Image (cartoon, rainbow, N blue to C red):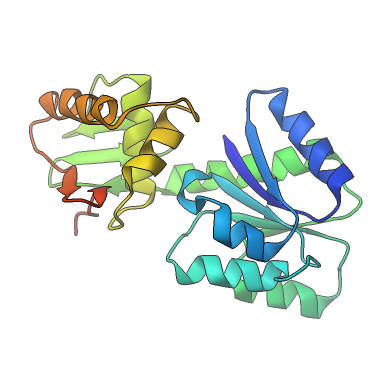
Length: 218
């Protein structure tokens, strides 16, 4: 799991990062909204954790900007604010849940897992007439029969399917699939070629000089 955290308290950032790293999760954090929007590769993350009172752009403004990009990744606000107006404003800006400070890290983990589980249960995507990708199992199905794919192929299909109808650049794909390792473009191309060889239909679209995408099948 990859977590994007917006929090201006350095101590809280390190506490959250250290806790989730124990279970091999990745936490990238930013202390202000403007820096996050300018530097984070938003498509890379499974969940956003956002403080509200942050410099340059607060959590509300930051999430609204993210949602304008049609990025639907779940978001949780972590905040000391608990009045109804803040809660309403948070949901209007596109959040999925609130965790109020102070909080237990175990509670935060439970909230994250619950949101991701609900999304996984309801979210599978039809990516061609016969192919479906299941976010919960990271499985590819052809006419409801499981297709044998590798771990890298699952991650590749996951990020393309999660961002369906959007072009994902090679740099984003390499960063997500190979976890920040220095991977050349030809390695990505070889991986996609091997995956396509397993498919009865080619639903992975190569957009010249831009990247790759999968369109949601309607």
